[in-house]
Image (cartoon, rainbow, N blue to C red; front, side):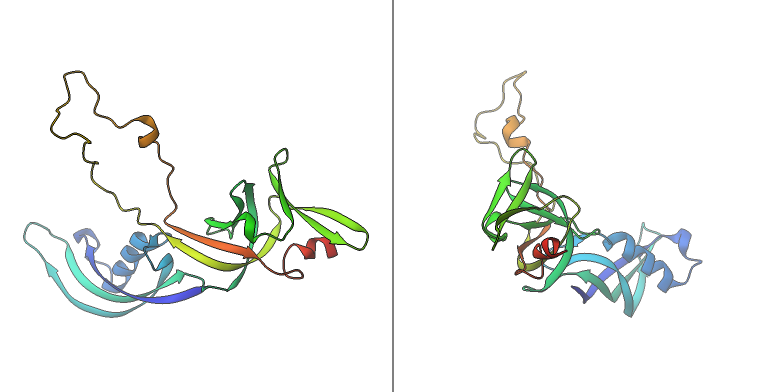
Length: 215
């Protein structure tokens, strides 16, 4: 679930912290820059583990800060495929069951990966597993806050780096005075995508929702 990732970065230390130990100042800057942020194709950065190498520091003209190339290791949340994790149901929607692990919320279990047969209760806004027993079918509701075990089936990274303004559809036709150049509302109001999403599947009976029924 957690891995150590080797990284290299150039860290800028402002002059008003020159009185501190260089390692401590660099560690603070690295945690400020990376902790609780997603690095594309790497995972969710948690905290600095250690600094393995410091190269020479430089002060450039016009900037009183020092710049140091640093080799370090960072603790990263990046589960491997087929790993079994435990989380809690955050909420349900037509898209599936949304799971949180407390420090990471972007986990989705799509409908086809739920225990079958399953249905979505529109009134309660929850997914229901129609569990078959010798006494007949029983509805097990996947309520918010319930603990759930799931297997990591896939991961999705999305590059959310800022991009420049989109090119106009007709660059040869300049806007007339008073004419708006903003994109239509449906284009400018796109849903914000999570930079890192885990796609899961409910574990087999005995590891997941069935424990609710047995208890």
